[in-house]
Image (tube, rainbow, N blue to C red; front, side, top):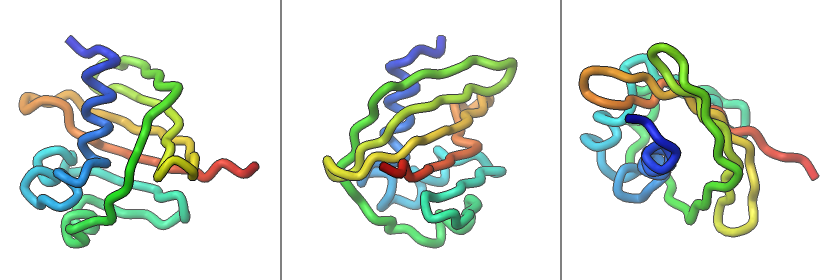
Length: 113
């Protein structure tokens, strides 16, 4: 059963030092068709992310989390606070597979004040 706490836990995994510095864990978490649009507008696929490990690590907090269940995927939206100062709006898409949830898509957009 998919619930809010499980989804937040998965979101925090791909942002955590444990995963951002470990090729095998990140490889297992990301869907083969993973695609990211970073806050800078730059795009990344799964190979790009895996080849960049170790990735930068920061302190993250998730706020205002919501999600929508579809037939074979979940869309999550939330605010991400980075290092207690920078706030971005995030959207992710998680695919449900026989191996569990896999991150298909991640978009991080700067919020202009």
